[in-house]
Image (cartoon, rainbow over all chains, first blue to last red):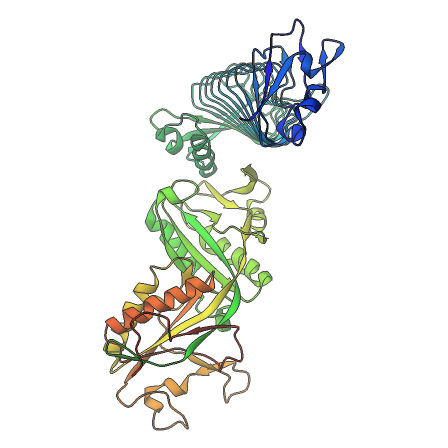
Length: 271
Length: 300
């Protein structure tokens, strides 16, 4: 049985658990894990005050219970596999460097912010600022992959510098806001102000989009690199049809208020 | 030794280390992928005159390619790592970048890599863009047709070049028929290419020449027309024509396997004799004995 931390009951105020990741707990025995510091609101506590520790193993960590008020799950992890068996709170996977973090339910706001590597998979939906920038920083996610099987909130990939974010459901407003590079793939609908102030990078939309007037049409074509990306996402379990992979995309360049070196690729009907 | 009715000379092929790479080319149709691979591997029969040796390894099904399109894989070999890097940039730049609908990927795993797409990107004149997926960087180079996609780094590895068999027959038609059968059998082996036209060379060479400055010249000991003229001949009295198949591979085992299949096929197609080329074992570190290469070989 994998090392499992089970939250006995939801905390009354958010519980911050920075450092709970398989790579950091590797080699710890259960007593050491139980003694780890967590923050319950503004009070220092021990992990054993909230979690029951069972199982063992270095490669995989499993988190169970109602974790919606538990923040920073898997933050900064650099290897191994972390499975959250249900929902997770804010800042899940923030600043990840490697490994795989799978959330079987929903995640709160700021998931994957500042991420530099690894893969965050959300089977449910994500909140706002997915893969965005840490507070006070210009650049958002700098590497790695985020896959969301449900919907995502506003400002997906805000300030994105490198990496891939794919959302199977609907994205909120201002996805790709001020993005610097990287790739966002929206399989469902997208909100307003898509790619506002983007400098470089790619946003792929599979649905109708109302673009800002600062984007200019370039051409309709089949981007060779996109087939690579979409095959990759299909292999990771996102629902991609052949006509999305092989289809024609309208290329819009923008944002004209910035460098106009970014692109929004919009799948054409019957392409 | 004999294999069926073919006499097999008890000798060995002498092969050399060369640096190799695998280039995967995809396109909208198998025909365009093949066209690019053919162009990339053209004029690359021998390092002596072409600076590299190359050939099409095989056609690729869409399920085998990175972008799910039909493709072809080619192998390119050169004497050293730096030379291989230069040839990759030259040949992909001139033969794949220019070819309609193609994209180009590294097809080899390995720790040593050379920069290819990172050089070709400059053709984009500042409008190029890169994408990083799964730890690999790709360059998108805008072209008049649309966009050329090329992987930044290509793996290079030390391979084995100069594996060979030499097929002898009573006349040109018979010898060529047996050699064609051998080449076809060799092409079923992965990780190898046959760099000469159709896989077959009619002009095997020896090292050196009576003319200064020539590093190779005709293999007079195997020229049937010179049998009565040269101080030493390896052409038996009943032989009227000789062909050679050179094999370059990514591994010693693949080259040996190709030689074995070629030997069997040549014997099955009526070759009078099969032998192999070597330099007395003094030059190349890889020796592939014909003895023991295939089951069924028996001593006379």
